[in-house]
Length: 289
Image 1 (tube, rainbow, N blue to C red):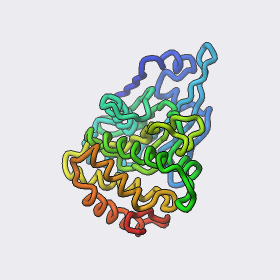
Image 2 (image 1 turned 180 degrees about the horizontal axis):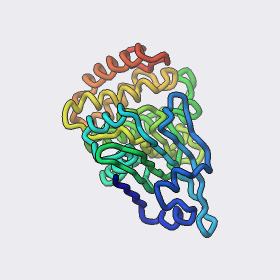
Image 3 (image 1 turned 90 degrees about the horizontal axis):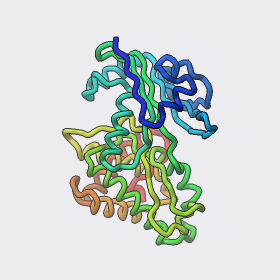
Image 4 (image 1 turned 180 degrees about the vertical axis):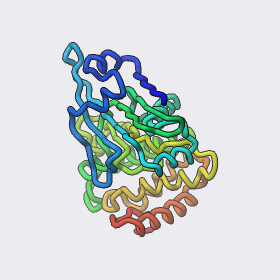
């Protein structure tokens, strides 16, 4: 059995000062806010924790713990070509690869794992706090329904900026596989955060990197899935058909590896419709307007 513990430079003293110096220490930690959600399996835990250093400076970190993953999860790692990486190590490496590629994403602080050959016993990853708010929460507050007046320049900045961000992510060879609005954080350039008051494109950042990978085959299939997940999770009353097509046009300007905007619109619409048939929530399909 092997055990690994890695800490990003700058976090060593913080973790050691709070007694978080080993895999066992972190699994014994129970101070913070549990971020459980419906459907989260018992072998997975998510925490929001606040740590104060010796000078009293507060640091917010997000802890993901994985204890005795079931066989199907172990098999999924093996199938995806990660037999020697734990669940936590995969997210750790994904975060580092995105940073090296210049893609804004959540940053890691530490991870540890206990492995018996390709079998994962337990692991954890600590992630830094992302500034901003998820698009899932931000959009309904700051983007009014289509029937109401709104600064068109602000809407264009929002959609064009997001299209370029996703295009750069895909152009770097990555796909997310969970690219819903809840996993894209927005950092507006004005304190108010209102789209109509934004003078420049907002900044975006990816979270939840567990399923990120670089496909070697059928790349467009995975890209279409990402784009369909964004489309599906965007409320129809906030972003209309023409704006969705504009998004794809801007996306193709940034990343033209997977076909024209017209072709992608057809593929994304089909994938979105299939997602809608499988799940109860209303779809945000391009072919629904």
